[in-house]
Every structure is written in C-alpha cells, then in structure tokens.
Length: 219
Ligand SMILES: Nc1ncnc2c1ncn2[C@@H]1O[C@H](COP(=O)(O)OP(=O)(O)OP(=O)(O)O)[C@@H](O)[C@H]1O
Image (tube, rainbow, N blue to C red):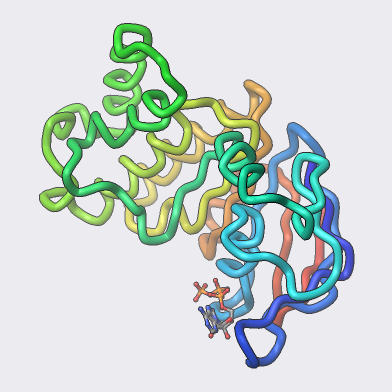
C-alpha cells in the first residue's frame, strides 16, 4: 500500500531531515512511528498525507508514484485517507457535529444516512455534551477528540494520526487507542506517530523508530 525506497527530504536549502528511508507498509497493517523530538516524525507523516513530496528516492501510495501525481490525482487520493493533524485543523465556523460530518458531506452523502453515526461517535470519544458548540470553546483535548472523530468517521483505507493522544489523560488515551484498533479490525491500515511509550505498550504492533532522519523497524 505504501512503499519508500531511499527517500530523502529536506526543507528548502536546509539539511536532510529524512535520509535513506526505506520500508513497505502492507494493506491492513498497524504501526507506531516514534522517536525523539525533532527526529522527523511529523515530516514523515507530511509525506504520507501528501502535503510534501520527497526530495529524493521513490515513494508510492496506493500504487501511485507520488512524483508523477497530477493536480487532479491529489484530492482523489486524499479522500482515501483519514488524517489527525497535530494542530487539529478544525473549522471554527462549523459546530463539532458539522466538523465531524464534513468528510461525509463532501462525499455527497445524505445527512439522514449518517446523523446517528456522527452523534454516536461523538459520544464514544466523550464529546456527547459538545455536539453543537464550535471549536473555539473546546479545550485542547476536546479539539483533539473532534479531530480524531472526523478522521475515522469515513472508515478510511489509511489512517494517519500525529500525536493523537498528546492532549488527553491516560484513561482517555486508552479509549482512543481502542477506537484505532477497532478501525484496524475493520480493515483500515493505521500509522500513529507518538512519543507515548505507555500507549505503544498496550498494542503489539510494528514500531518505526526514527532517529536523526533514519528509520529502524522493530517487528
Ligand atoms: N517547515 C519546516 N521548515 C524547515 N525545517 C523544518 C520544518 N519542519 C520541520 N523542520 C525540521 O525538520 C526536523 C524534523 O522535524 P519534525 O517536526 O519532522 O520532527 P518530529 O520528530 O515530528 O518532532 P516533534 O516530536 O518535536 O514533533 C527538525 O530539525 C525541524 O527543525
């Protein structure tokens, strides 16, 4: 599903922040991406969600070589992804409910077909009392949970989550991990970038450890 061969990434004229990164991520697999601060986790996630292209090497996603993607391919591929951004990226003029429902609306679904699912998911992530408020009044942890709900509501083929439990307490983090595990059980390929060793210890999954731009894989 994802293939990296000797991928390198640099920002502008700066040094390479990812170096000779090679791996394969199979459809339906689950992996954590970890490593010290500044090691390149967010940069690797940006490549995976097609916000950046490698400056060298080969990267393919869903069997498309990203170097040759056209402008029209990008939105089509992105629709197959669910992404939890580190900075959440909720739309402030929409309610929590509307933010989570947005990917379904963009897909052209009728509200009657998803209303119950969205409300149930918001309850599951502990936002049952926040359905109709707008993001500016949500706490950091509440925004994070709304962002997670928005990323999983479509049951995407590939879920990419950057520090998805960074703003919540350990009990809630375990609950959110259960949500990712359930999605994985239903067939989604999952990549979670995290510093949280306690979280990783709760699920026996492959670990990608980044260090100074290089990746080591522990199966
Ligand atoms: N937009 C950018 N422009 C220039 N350099 C950048 C940019 N974003 C990240 N970097 C640099 O790339 C390197 C890797 O950063 P990145 O954010 O990918 O690491 P990280 O492992 O996600 O760190 P953290 O765990 O602290 O979020 C760092 O040296 C950082 O300064």
